[in-house]
Image 1 (cartoon, rainbow, N blue to C red):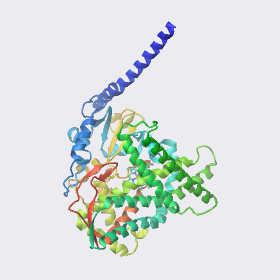
Image 2: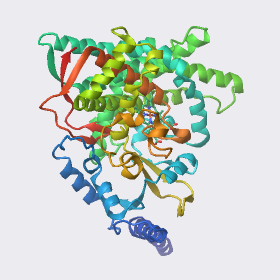
Image 3: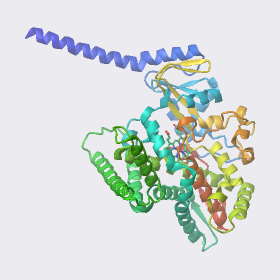
Image 4: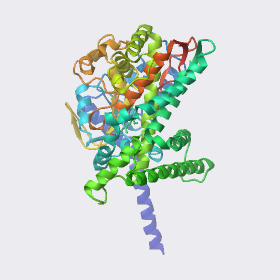
Length: 515
Ligand code: HEM
């Protein structure tokens, strides 16, 4: 008996020591080792502070700068408000610097050559999973890697080809005109009205993605997206509190119910569609139909082997991802375009003139939208100054050589879209100013062939929906310009902030007038 107790004690003590060692390694030894390594390579940053690193300073600074709006001027130097800590770090330590996210050092990457290399070495470098709880909300293309990613991307790609998007234009138009009709109703009495356009744009792009993804099953699709919206709020609340997913709390039960409801609805739509396609019926030219057809083609070509094509579960996740990846991003582009065109009335007039010349008062066609030059320049400049995603987080899966630096596996890097887009060395002294003319001869001339503009990411994992987003934005902006003139309301407060993406913290209050 005594010997059993001794053995158990030894096992117990070994377990405690092993855990203590792991904790010590995680909170102190590993961070200090990585810090030494980074400094030897020539990177600089604050010294590591136990467990929290720079997190406390960073959150305090963010709370402080975001407690009041910023002055709206011709300079759109928004980084000090949107990412004050990183901005300060780069100013203090230079481009080759790092910040501490808790015990993890995150290396800032802003050099065009290094950025290009990272995007191209995507097998070595994967997206950082910031909080595993997000996987419960959505998975799909954005979070898959290796063969699974390649297979999914190949199957989904055709859904975003230009000729498919052309077929979706009438659906885009329907959603945009509903918003325009609503705005017309609001201005009809007085000839003008004050309106916060931000929720309207969010609603419109949710509508666009519901119709584009589900076509004839739009009503069910809209219901799914409403549930996803609700679920996003639930998850946001969960991660802000101490949340234990498996406890049978009221909140957890509701989240499980919503998940189940979403899956049942999606599975219903998918099964119906698969049957229709097998019966040779048209797929309605929506994302789901094209994706299922492409999937069936893949299975036909490679036989019904295991791992061929996508499962219903995979399709469910991809549909959810379309909603998350496509809704807020496009409405963000549109909201900043409206703010900047309100501030720059000369560009608003130029863009309107182009739109009226191209379509008069008729509905825009796909070909005419593709030829809009001024509107495109304006949208590119908006994406440069106010990119919806301000940074792309990556984790190195293997030891990676980056120019003169060698970085160890497991390290996090941050690809700074916003800082690169505002870099004066790359864009000139007027980098913070709204000057769409810099894109008059296309992106490569504007960037002087440097890798300095990547609002949609780059390399093999570039945004699959970029043409979709640009088409939707061009159409919506053209319709708005066709029907209204707009100005900033005196109650507008300029407050770009990173919520999930770069959004107007207090909305976008505009005076809208009938043209
Ligand atoms: C202005 C609008 C948009 C912007 C600025 C944008 C931006 C981006 C960026 C920066 C990435 C790369 C992320 C990374 O490398 O970590 C990305 C990926 C992605 N985007 Fe978009 N996006 C937009 C609209 C859309 C739309 C409308 C859809 C779909 C309907 C979409 C679907 C996706 C998907 C599925 C990925 C993952 C691609 C992959 O990993 O292969 N995006 N987007």
